[in-house]
Amino acid sequence: MIEARDLVKQYRMGQVTLQALRGVSFQVETGSFVAIVGPSGAGKSTLLHLLAGLDSPTKGEVLWEGQALSSISDAKRSMLRNRMLGVVFQSYHLMSELSALENVMLPGLVNGQATLRQLRERGLSCLEQVGLAHRIQHRPQQLSGGEQQRVAIARALVNRPRVLLCDEPSGNLDSATGEEIANLLIRFCEQERVSLILVTHDTRFSSRAHRILVMRDGQIVSDGPVSESHK
Ligand SMILES: Nc1ncnc2c1ncn2[C@@H]1O[C@H](COP(=O)(O)OP(=O)(O)OP(=O)(O)O)[C@@H](O)[C@H]1O
Ligand SMILES: [Mg+2]
Image (tube, rainbow, N blue to C red):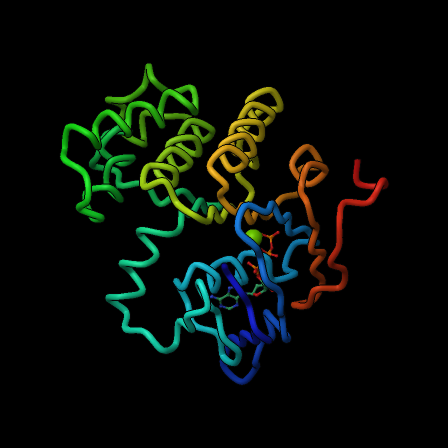
């Protein structure tokens, strides 16, 4: 479904080359829940950006449903991303001039497969699912950090993705809301058979994953089912 093949990512900083990823390979099957954990700077967000096709690897390849991203045009990649993937990043990237509801509807407008009315209904239902039905007209700057995070999650669900990529989705939430969001994401992905790839420090998420990838220094140092020590 989604595959990383020997991904290397280097950043050139003047004279110095920084190795953010040093050969990362794995495959994620439909409907499975993979947690990515590891210390700050390990390369988790870099990996997620590459999996989302938002940045290109220095070496290696990302494949979506067997298709190498390097072999398709930017336009086709954007279209596939919009149809297939939901992405929630550490910084929410909401459009400041749009309301919460409009932000959630936006990927659906780009997709162009639903009418405005259907999209509005779907947007409302996604906002309801994240507990924000009472904030639909708010602009991002009128929302708390946790509320903005929840708008970003609702937006990621609006096109009914096959794969959901999330970077610290509970990072800005209090513990009760974090728990709710964890339940919501996991339930949604189980019900819809969506693959969930989730970067997290939160053991409430990782303990429920089918598989945990531990990253350190740009590499996967452990890849396996959740061990008892994680529960
Ligand atoms: N655009 C960039 N230019 C230069 N270096 C970068 C860039 N993006 C990331 N890095 C470096 O690559 C390494 C991996 O960064 P990354 O953001 O993937 O870490 P992370 O595992 O997500 O950390 P955190 O848990 O703090 O979010 C870091 O050392 C970071 O400084
Ligand atoms: Mg990160």
